[in-house]
Image (cartoon, rainbow, N blue to C red; front, side, top):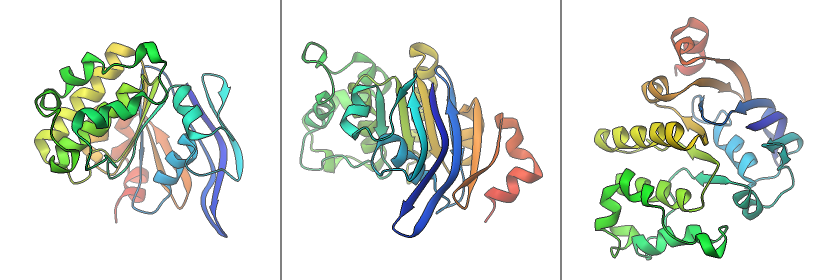
Length: 231
C-alpha cells in the first residue's frame, strides 16, 4: 500500500501540508476531499515527486519514495493523472498514449487493451490531435496514458473537473473496474462529493493543509465532515 506519514511541505515560507498521514491500500479506492486551496494537490505532488517534502516519509509497498525522482517513482508503479489533464495538444492520441512508454521495459511497450475497453472512443481517434478532443475525451486520454505505464497505484487529481456527466459516469466505471479487476491501489483527489461517496472505500478530508477527518464514505454525511466541506 501507499503510506504517507507526518508529511510537511512548503512553498518558500508558506506551509502547504502539516503533518499529513494517509494510507491507500491495494485493491481499494481512497478519496481525499476538501475545499479549494486546502493542500490536496500539494499532497499528490509530494507523492509523485513533483515537489520535495520538508519532513515526513512516503513509501509504496515498503519502498521509500521520499527523495526519489518522479521518473523513478513511475518505475515503482506510481501512475499519475494530473489536474487539468496536461496532454500534449499537438501530438496524436496514439502518440500521447505512447509517451507512457517512458518508465516501461522495452518488451512491455504496448498500449494495454484495457485502455480501449474502458474508453472505446480513444481507439476511433488514434490519429486525431490531442488538442482537438473535448475536455472529457482528454481526461479519458490522460487516464489511458497513465495506464500505459502499468501502474500499481493510480493517482488522480480531480478527474471530474469540468467534465460532462456522461463522461463522469464512464470515468467512475473505469475506476471501479480497475480496482476490482487489477487489485491496484487508487488514490483519488476530488471535490465532487457524490462521486467519492459512490466509489470510495475510505475517505480523508483536508482543511488548511491537515487531515481533519477520515472514515468510510458513510461518514461524509456527518455534521463534522460537512463542516469542513461546505463553503
